[in-house]
Image (cartoon, rainbow, N blue to C red; front, side):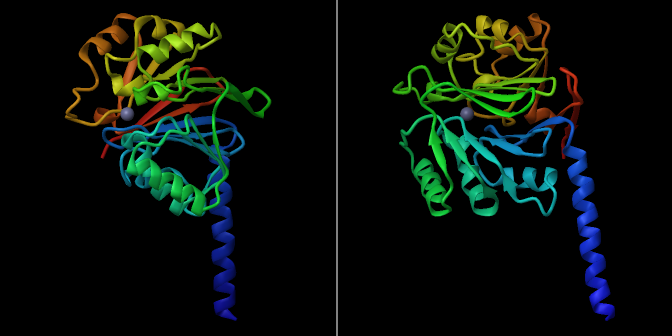
Length: 281
Ligand SMILES: [Zn+2]
């Protein structure tokens, strides 16, 4: 009898913890740019609690981030987006698929040149996850005043895999966020040529702050107030480029870097500019 009561108490407590945790993520849009070294991975919480993971970094570090920011009982990723197939964006997703319930995957192209990319698609198939290759512009409506625009690469056959990056713009509950994978200048010109509204308060620097991306006209079209650079300390590519950092500064844009600031969490409390918190171990 005592044992039974004990178990009931545990379940009640577990339920309370789950409810409290859920309430924390309801009513606001939250983004966490994980410190995954030289790579990209960002988790988006929507106001209704659904979660989108964009890229998974180069290894299992993404699991540490997910473990830190998701409730212990919460194993569901509602939408997983792969910007492009390079290892520093895709490899970590293999373990995510194995350890979390991923409801849906959207990627940019059907090309798959690397072993890592093939492993990812095998994992997707073996877990029966519906997956979709984005061929056309798509807008996913998540609720009133909450949608996600997805832009396929303008040249999906580009030999430069970076230019096969899928870009996305989240407009939700006051938040406007633009992420463009590792798209380089040709891809940025493709996005500009669409002539649509690319504006966002928050922009993730493309290609880890490389000067092959982040062209001035593109940044001006987005017109961000805050830029997040997802980059590994001491990386061999010398990302981010000093000239790009100077460009951001000359445009008066504040920026944070995962190599210096660690995990970067942005909490939009119905406002266009987020509360920023950093978590560097
Ligand atoms: Zn990359």
